[in-house]
Image (cartoon, rainbow, N blue to C red):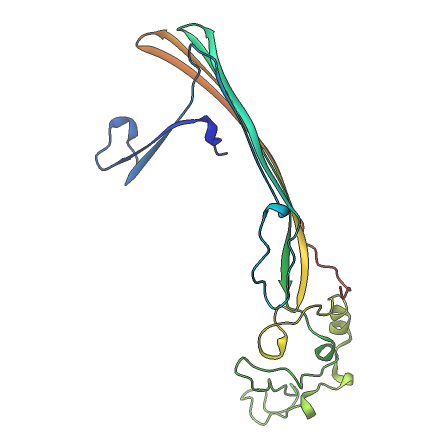
Length: 238
């Protein structure tokens, strides 16, 4: 829980030698004082709104042009404080809501059709050389010497494991041009939805029993629902 900005009266940073009330702290002590009611009624209201129509287009996002994705954010609320009994009893309350609806572009690396079929003839290392695929049943299993590379750097269909082939079918095919050697990195683009609903409530009561004896109590509550959906359409190519 973080107190809304409209409820903060002052923030104090104390370093070095600290008073007894700020003991048991090393380096720095931060004191946050929230607002209280007074003999006069005071309040505030605020609203912040943002969506994709108010934002600039992305300048660069990988190799593919990316349009502005839907987004809507709102921060709104208000405060109210005043006397219950003048000079003795006061109240202060606040509410802040935060609503966010956003779609985000996400990139993943998936095998293309050639690699799925065992064809690594275009699989390159970062410096542009071919990634050699060797027969794991050849050569000395202890030293790794005498290994034989698959012909044309292609794994024969008869050597493909049926279970791995079924797992590969769950992955979508590339839908954008990838980066890196061979264009295999970040070659699949999708969107994910992120939703946030947060509501903060604060209530504070101050009682001035005497000029030297004050009592106060505060209640704060935050209700938040955060849903960040991960969209990866298994078995789809778009």
